[in-house]
Amino acid sequence: MAATLQFDLVSPEKRLASFQAVEVQIPGADGDMTAMEGHTPTITTLRPGILKAVGTDKTLAFAVTGGFAEITAAGVSVLAEQAVPVEDLSGTVLDGMIDQARELASMALPDDKDMAEKLVQDMMALRQHQAH
Amino acid sequence: MPSLKDLKNKITSIKNTRKITKAMQMVAAAKLRRAQEAAEAGRPYAERMNAVMAGLSASVGGSTSAPRLLAGTGSNKVHLLVVMTAERGLCGGFNSTIVRLARVRINALLGQGKTVKILTVGKKGREQLKRDFAAHFVGHVDLSEVKRVGYVQAQAIAKDILQRFDAGEFDVATLFFNRFQSVIAQVPTAQQVIPAKFEAVEDTTTALYDYEPSEEGILADLLPRGVATQVFTALLENGASEQGARMSAMDNATRNAGDMIDKYTTIYNRSRQAAITKELIEIISGAEAL
Image (cartoon, rainbow over the protein chains, first blue to last red):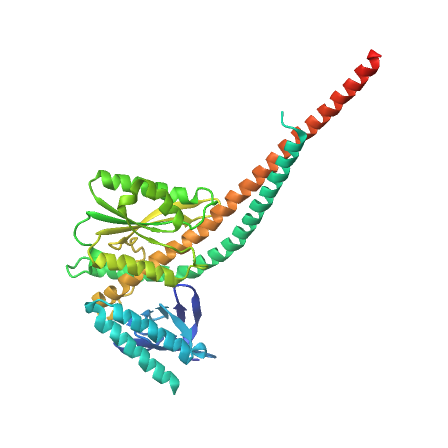
């Protein structure tokens, strides 16, 4: 049996998932990464994308918009600002999120403008990915 | 001596009041359960967030490049007090305890010659503070239309605070709210959010983390989120406290109404008996006179 690590996904409002996973695919701000048992302790921020946790008997995927992940040798905890199970993800939900991001981008201060616009781009990419 | 009819009316009216307070108590009990669940559910996120930020700030805090949200503006002249109270009354000392704590702090700060700005969340605190400190008000957040406080509201409040900070409107921000301990105990709390303060990290076994992007980058990203999380936690604690306070206040009110009903019923019976006795005496003495 493959070695597992503890996977936790929490949002500010509730705990969304907590189980033993074999690997967790994380959309990191500097690029995607996959965490498995024994990973170097890492903290990374998230960009909007699909977070996927592969367990021995189930695989869960969530669309996350931002937050960060804390990876240790024994577990991964993802603190997502907003996370939606992929099954519940429809074009309309995503469009809503994109609109929200756009609105934020339009109000952002010049310093944060690039960041906010990148967020919108990431969201659009996610939307296209989902449409296929 | 009130007439029998007056007494009877009084008893009926107290009985009605008791029905209302009893209903309010039960509603508060149901809401309290939900509010407590929400507070419980929000805890893992807040704790994890706090732990990571405490670790980060410990390693970055010393450097001169530390973000302003952590290091502060370098002065502490202007204080922003975010006073969070309920939208409704009839919840015992809930609102007044927060306001009292805030008032003591405001007077202390004013005494030290600092500038005080007040941002209120919830109508009740605004009403109470407005009497003395109307000149210091900078804003008010109305949550009376919100049925269930969510992270969205916390984000909105945090954004407001952060924008003011970026605009250089204040140096130090403090949240005032009631921390929920039990149904009968709510602790008024003042929590400083800007510059960020963390309880010392007790576990020294924390692994050395790799950071992606950089430590500073992550911290800059996390600190604003941290403010939102703290506001959210405060809102949830406040929500649970409000319902807890209301429940015990209404329980007391119901019991008081019961006591009053007993008292007035005794008086009513006594005066009824007195009236009967008086009538009898009149009849007997009338008969004897013949």
